Amino acid sequence: MRQLLLGTAFLAVTAPAALAAPVSRFTLDNGLEVVVIEDHRAPVAVQMMWYKVGAADEPPGHSGIAHFFEHLMFKATDDLAAGEFSRIVEAQGGNDNAFTSWDYTAYYQRVAADRLDLMMTIEADRMRDLQLTDDVVATERNVILEERNQRTDSDPRSLFQEQTRAAQYLNHPYGVPVIGWRHEIEALNRRDAEAFYKTYYAPNNAVLVVAGDVTPDAVRAMAETHYGPLQPTADLPPRLRPQEPPQLAERRITMADARVSQPYMMRTYLAPKRESGNQKEAAALLYLAELLGGSGTTSLFAKGLQFQDPKAVYSYAFYDGTAVDSGTFGFGLVPLPGVNPEAAEAAMDQIVADFLKSGPDPAAFERIRTQLRASEIYGRDDAQGLAQRYGEALTVGLTLQDIEDWPKVLQEVTPDDVMAAARKVLDRRNAVTGWLMDTDEEAAQ
Image 1: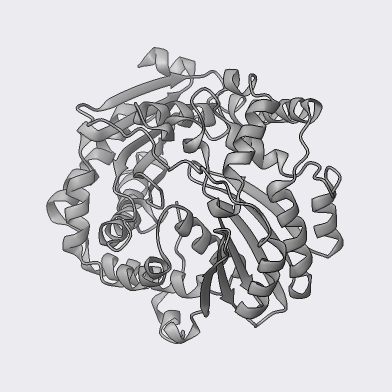
Image 2 (image 1 turned 30 degrees about the vertical axis):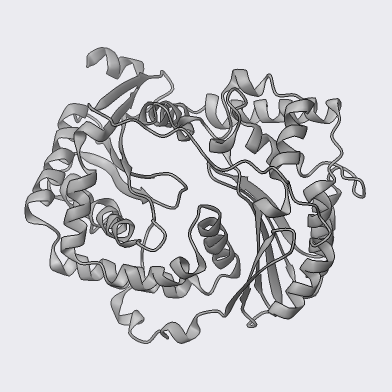
């Protein structure tokens, strides 16, 4: 859930599209797509390498291998020792990291602009020249199993969210956790890792985004020198995933765990993604999420559940539509101590029903429009944030034009657009509703 805290009075003095960073794009002969976002206000550059492979692209039975490979990319290459990549970045006064989602895996470095050539040297080295051994793979597999222990298996809410997502997707691999199922992680081996690496870690399956104090000509020269000689994957498989069948009835799950201190409710719906060339519906769903639960003080859920007739300690709504296959819309709450979970859920449902009848308050709608505009403007002050915005969109099938059009699309949304999207998405037959409770609460229910 995003918190939008920028006010209307301050926005009136901000600059319009003239502050938009110049963006260039070119493609190397081996298929590597390169995007350059110029920002000369500070002598800093961000390099982000985005691979068009994530958890939803994994071979059946090999869940977690995309995330596994995010770890392995910091091991030894033919030129670098294990861990040396990050030590080089740190020695230049920079920082680096990586992350994996269902649709992509990304690696980044933020350094002084005059260190960009070095960053390309070492990033290109590990794209095709990792040196994997059975010992390296086994050791890192144990690290990931411990990560799952700490972040998922020891956290009831993480387990609950994992189970809820699995219930949402009966057929699509979006229902598989990014970190992977434990029994499948345990079976991953060097042969699996090498096959995955040789197939997907290739220039024709990647997008390089460079943002900051750079010029397109300089970036092109460096990219051609370091990435240009790398061989593409000749038989790169298309991104064809199993799709969801129609959902015919609401799915409900209740999970009990003695470690839970407060009940927690979450409901999710499959929702339209950001469609290339037609992002209007996605923009309307972003407004809907903000209207229902985007603010802890002014949203409908906050006012109705936390102030006017208190039923919840906390409530929220969200929309995530930047994806290859489908988006997700959802909301939820944490009831006040002593409030019956059924009563809290019923109160939330009533707010949604009232909204579907009456529509958004005009003043609230315009406030969100202003906040979204402010958020887009100030987002351009962060080179790394810009690089992430472009990389994420391009790896899921959106275009540069879609990214540039997005602020304008947001400003053109009308209340009628929001209501049309709400009536389409907020169908309980397409929902998964889950409750996480402690064991005593479940027994009482």
